[in-house]
Amino acid sequence: MNSTTFDNISALTETIAEQTLANSNNFKEMMDVLKANSVQAGNVTGNSTGNSTRLRGKHYYWTHGRSYDKDHNSAKCKNPADGHVAIAI
Image 1 (cartoon, one colour):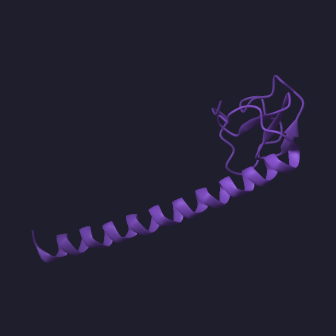
Image 2 (cartoon, helix red, strand yellow):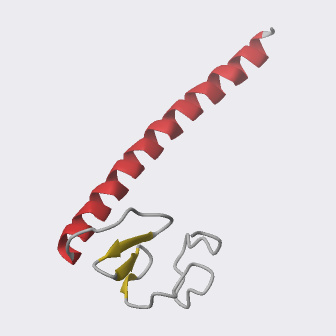
Image 3 (spheres, one colour):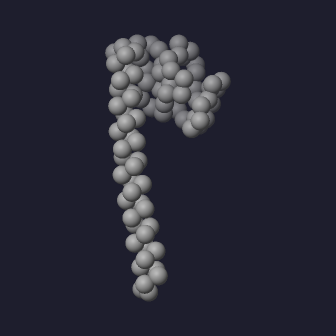
């Protein structure tokens, strides 16, 4: 392996490690916000899939908050925010 290849692999490895740490920190912050919102909204009665958490028969969407529309889903969302995933469950 020549020194250029080694340097490239080293640089990529360092970048991946930095991004992994940033992603981990972002995920922790996101979970802290979700937990805080769940506590404010009431007792969480279900598990989260996609961006919806069931709260006492209501739904919470991270992009626009609480919804009472049981038929709302990502594909039908009329208020998508940046980062919205239309194919999410």
